[in-house]
Every structure is written in structure tokens, then in C-alpha cells.
Length: 175
Image (tube, rainbow, N blue to C red; front, side):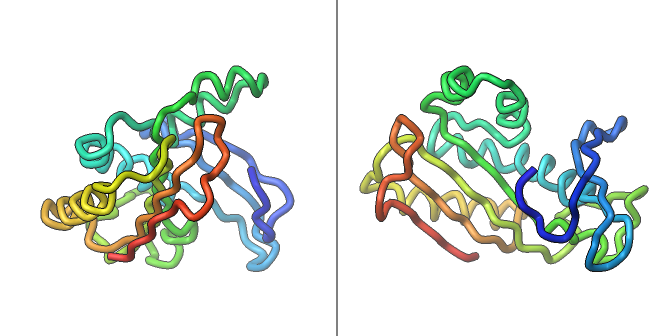
């Protein structure tokens, strides 16, 4: 689950109605039980909505839900084989967004109803191409024009076919 720093253990659960996987934990800093339901639900929703825009410009991508299914396997070689040369899309909202915005988790409104700024990370299994910056700008402009996202931070990382990041091959744009 990574190194979160403010809890020791978490339960990974799945919401029956939405199919969203999220964490429930005791936050050592606040002294309260917390969860990542809203941020994880918004991630699922936004990735599905953003995916066609990214695929139009860059080709097929795997979203985090698909990557999660792949990485649950235990054989590292099998994981790498399944991910292969696929491009990857990961969108992240701050995990405390629900608490911060005082959103009732029983009525999880859309991320579009709030002025939130997620991070979009696109990983491309290739070297940088001359037209890439125009492609990324087109994705951002389309997302804003179609009111899919108002703000965000897009990070694009290039990796070699064996999964190693290529030096000095990253693009970052705040919108």
C-alpha cells in the first residue's frame, strides 16, 4: 500500500454499489477513523471519463483499476508481461478531499461539482516525439472545453520497454 506515514495498518475494502476499492484506517495524526472512498471513487470516475481523450491523442492506455487487477498477481514476470508496452493513465485526487470539502460519503457528488485539481500521470513506453507537446496541450484543452476537468497537473513520463524511466524525458503542465 505504500508508505503513508500517518497510519500503520489499513483495511482494503470494495464498495458494493460503486465497485470502488478504497482504504479504511485509523489516522495516527488526527486520532480518527478515516477512509479514501471519495478520492478513490473520483479517481475511478475521472479516469474513465479522461481515458478517451488520452487514447485519441496517444493510443490505448491502461487505467489504474486495470493495473490494480494486473499487479495483484504474485509473479513479477507475469505482471511485467501483462503490462508490456501499454501506456498507463493514473489520476489522483488528494485522499482527504471528502473530509476537506465536507462531502457526505453516502452522497458522493461528482468531482465536477467542486473546484478540485487532480494530478494526471501518463506513462508512455517510448521515447519522446516531436508532436508530443501539441498532443498533451490538445488533451488539456479538450478536457477544459468539454468541462471534464477545470484544473489539474499533467505529468508525462517516458519509460523504456523494460520499465526503466528515460533520463530527462518528462513533461509537466499545470492547468
